[in-house]
Amino acid sequence: MTTSAPSPGERIDIPSLPNLRDVGGYATAGDGTVRTGVLYRSAGLARMTDEDAVAFAALGVRTVFDLRTDAERAMAPDRVPDGAALVELDILGDHRAAAPARLQSVFADPTTAPDLFGSGRAEQALREAYRDLVLLPSARDGYRVFFEHLADGAHPALVHCTAGKDRTGWAVASALLLAGVSEDDVMADYVTSNRDLLPALAPLFDAFSERGGDPDLIMPVFRVEPEYLELAMATVRREFGSIADYFRDGLGIDAAAQARVRAALVAS
Image (tube, rainbow, N blue to C red; front, side, top):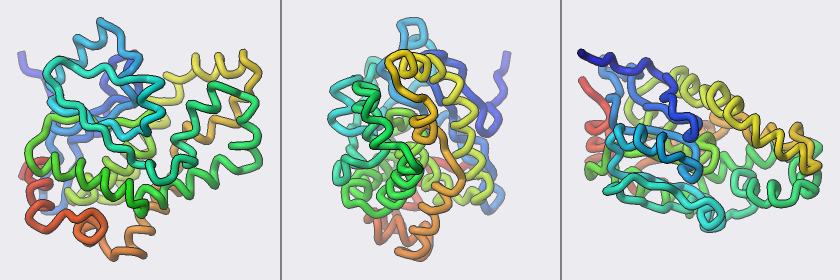
């Protein structure tokens, strides 16, 4: 019996691993297609059950890229498949006040949510975070290592952060853009996180409410909005010129290494 390749953006149903999907299947310039079974994206792996760990191991992931801060990892260590390498890359290490890295402290003390995320501060923090994903030295160093590993064959790979939408979102978006996927399809993949992540987090929002927190204050931090990814892409154009220039001048990934990344990701 043959198994058909997943459709672009199709959810992989492993319940304790939300926001999991293969980033393959998208058309690229030059009549190529992003390969399936090469790069996966998800939320963190800490809550994966024994049963789901078996299903996840069947994906054959060889390398797990964890883009979280040290504090996030300490509170929720990854559960990594036997034999898989774990590569820890603190993307927001130079800006620990960035919104995606604040979530653990807010859940620890819901009374801090109004000061951190109320009155539009959540949305503004996300805008700042997406500029940081392109420009912060820690982000540039981390994404450089991520793409160097892909260029050198460290796949099948999975990349994740806490929710799998911002730090992971830019990792995947920049990979797809380098592969030649259209901005429309890159955006479609990005916003799919709203479909997969928010329903999975309903118990978390309920628990936050039971502890006296207002879920509406933290909801913007768990949503993706097109304007955030558009801001990151605009920052690339303004600061570097093109996605290839961002890889070369921002990440230090030269043309030869870029070609190896494309070769790993794209089937002609």
